[in-house]
Image (tube, rainbow, N blue to C red; front, top):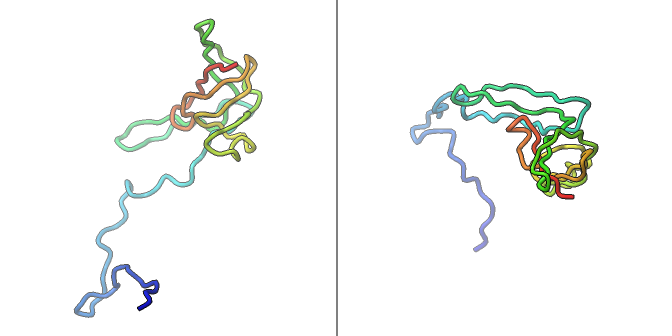
Length: 131
C-alpha cells in the first residue's frame, strides 16, 4: 500500500454541516513585527524609539557611522568612525550589503574590531579591538 500526501488541516465544516467561524480576532501580540530592519553603515547615526510589549521603549539603530571601541591593552573605550564591514559570520551577504550585526568584524579608525552589542536591539554599536 502506497501512502501519498493528504490534507491534515481542520475541516471548514462542522459535523452537523454548519460552517466553522474564527475562534477570535487576531490579537496585537500575535502579529509579527514585520521584516527585520538591520542597521546599515551610513552617513550619520540614526535611531528610532519604538514602543514594545509591556509599554517599554526600545531604541533601534537604523544607520551607524561611529562605534564605541574598547581597547583591551589601554583599558579604555574610544568613539571611532566605522570605515567598512569586513565580515559577518551570521550571513556573508550582510558584509556585502553593509549590514552591522553582533559578531561582525568592522574596520575602524583604530583598527579591526568585533561587534559585541546587538545594534538593532540596543541602539548602539559596542566593539572590542582585535588587532
